[in-house]
Amino acid sequence: MKKKAAAVLLCLAVIVNLFTACGSEIKGHEPKQISANDSSMSDSGNDSQNMNDSNTIVNPYDDSNQEFKGNVDTTIDYLKADNMKYYYERMVVGGDSIAYGWQYYGLLPKQRVVAQGGLSVFGFTVWEFETTGQKLNYKKTLKQVKPTLLYLCLGMNDVNIRPADQVTETYKNLLKSIVSIVPDCLIVVQSITPVCKSNVYKQVNNSSIRSYNAKFREMIASLGKENIIYFNAYNSLLGEDGYMESQYDGGDGLHINTKAYKKLLEDLSKRLNMEMAQQRLEVYEEERKKKQQ
Image 1 (cartoon, rainbow, N blue to C red):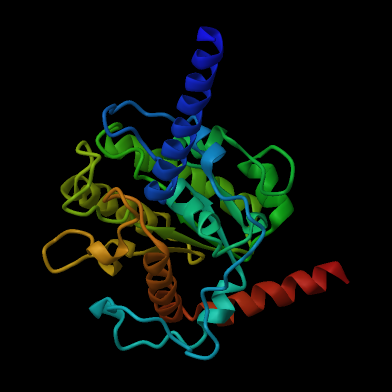
Image 2 (cartoon, rainbow, N blue to C red):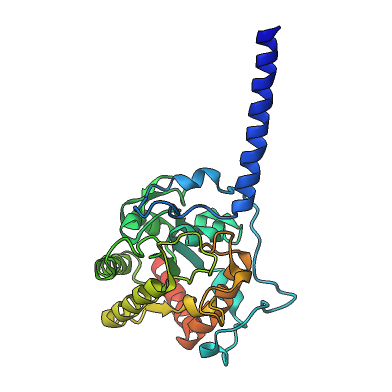
């Protein structure tokens, strides 16, 4: 009887444990990017085990509304995002867990996301992605995917861990490599997004993020490549108090939610319109068609 009672208690404990774990996973919203208690760099990508691999894709572009709710970055307020659907249909996203969020929240299909939680700029160059159904590095993946619009989101996992100059130089070499792989592609480098006042990752702060962003902007300008554009996503999500607006918080003060991704897509479209991006992408696509004939 004692053995039987012990077995019953053990089963109950396991069941309680399972329900507790599920609740924590749902509450977390986002894949963990870096440990709140450990300032070391992970680059492990193990967070993908808890992510949503659903094939259900939610198109964030609403044809019935033609726009998204939310504040607009005043630097691009005078522009329209009426061709947002055009950009959305061509976007391939690459980078870290914030980039992976496009897939995690069902905003983009797996085939258009070259990203993994926990990756630094250097980590992106050595990790293997399953975007194409095979484990391939970024070079082989991009050769297969062949994007005409590539949206990169990297750097959050480098802040306060590696020197900004070192990270920027690695990023610069990465961009040169990507251009050599897909020269007929418009590349957007997203700035690192801000954190909330309630950010649980205390080793990451907005002051450091701004310093890294300034380096990234300077680096892109120094490259002088017409097909590499800097996008100030930091300002898009920033509140009047100098922190990321709480309405965009993914649950930990650092990662972002669906509303934030929709805001970024809207502002990205306006930023691309400043560069006459749709016309340029149409040229790229026409040239590709001619090569295939």
